[in-house]
Length: 162
Image 1 (spheres, rainbow, N blue to C red):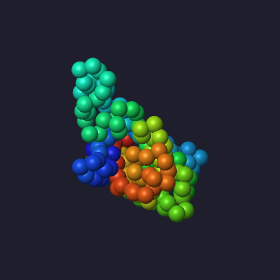
Image 2 (tube, rainbow, N blue to C red; image 1 turned 30 degrees about the horizontal axis):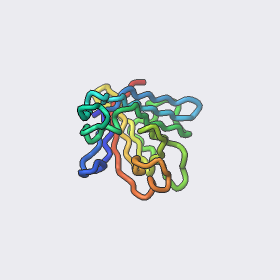
Image 3 (cartoon, helix red, strand yellow; image 1 turned 135 degrees about the horizontal axis):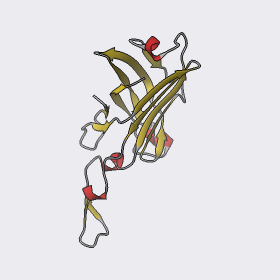
């Protein structure tokens, strides 16, 4: 829980896992807003440098994705709901063909959309849980066309407060 997992993303086809930080949800004037922060994890201390200190010899395989802050955001209109509790146990589906520009995944200092998202809000044992599944383009590329040539499934499961 409290993680975003991008399936088989890393070079050796293991999952990239980002730890979810603060998660905020609001529903105002029939606009649902979700923002999840993924705090920075690594510093230069996790890298091994050559004796001269000019070249990195090794670093964790996921270093580039976790050295800077990342965020996942959504802003979309919602009908027939006045509070977040009205959305519990209801799946919100974002169809990429008709609902573009609703999401933003900011990672590695670049913005990426998500695709074919399913978002479910639940309350379990008094705690609110957000589950978000969808697809990301290949976030290794700044070039939109290159990034769209390959998509990766992701799942986010995290707690939130209202």
